[in-house]
Image (cartoon, rainbow, N blue to C red; front, top):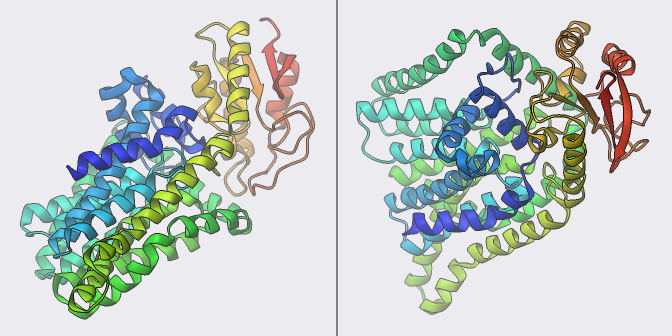
Length: 501
């Protein structure tokens, strides 16, 4: 029953994201997944810098629920992952003797916090499915551990990291919990074998498709340059996000702090689990600091261990109240449910904010209207199968246009990231454009001509501070200037058409 309730709750809170459309990152995942299913090779023909797990998971969802549409099938992954995480948090809490009310508060609290739009970005991100996989591994680690269990835990942890690198701390936490429960040498071998099998399957697939060098370039070389490019601006740009995230997750912090003290004091499975959850959270914070940037959706990766600790803390409070002349039973239940009420209020606030201004990665209504207007204009200028190029970083427009993308990149950040981009990379992109010129090019680099935004195409504008503005794009500008003409500016976005069109 709890799982069904959490599925409904997750879907309800994530509903604004379904209606308004995917965020920038989610648009990339949906777009790249679609190109994979059409025969493109991941990282070679359809590029992104996220590990392959998210694309494999979304491909599976697309095959099962694609009749609903590309975005709804990806959105369902977040709904199911969020609900599963909340349910398993309650299951883990029950295994260590936490009372039913505290279990439900912890499980529902995870869903309320993870799904609300300011943290979830409306759905479609990598963290929810990656966290769900890690929490399945955590759940197995709290039960009876056999050889096959060790293999499963190792494989799940590897799959989690292969979906989001932010779940690396879960490997430390869950692996440490398994080792703390005994059988160290055999446990290490079992975990390593399970993880190795999962990793070998993915690496083998990439090698067979000829994508391994491109995958290394995207996942290692680009991400290192991305981190360096954001080292100065990352936290400065994220202050408001950090503030919102702390406010929206405040419900879990006080009971989690009490849970740490209670669990470590009691020892046994409770103590080992509390220590594992603390390690998960601490290593996660260190990892985020090392990345040099913070987004609200990163909180998803730590909400599950924090909620397990909160369940321990709430259970401890309930025990104290029962043993003393404290408040009566009804008042006690209300006080234990207070964190859940706080999470619900925070979720409502997040839904309201999403509806008016979008999230830091989401889509504001004014941008949705602009995307729709450009879609109508492009449909009049080009046939259904004609390729397009979007100048800038607006992959949502590709999804709305639903037609071939002229280059391997669904956004221009790789071409402008210092330490990664190069003249050779720009020339490679230009060769793609020359070989098959897109019929239409849309300059979606700023809200309107002359407004600050991405590096200009043919109409000058000041730059917005992003840390990724290395300008080697003149060869592409020259190609556009000689082969295309401006036909109109649609709601602020210049639209160019091939001269012979």
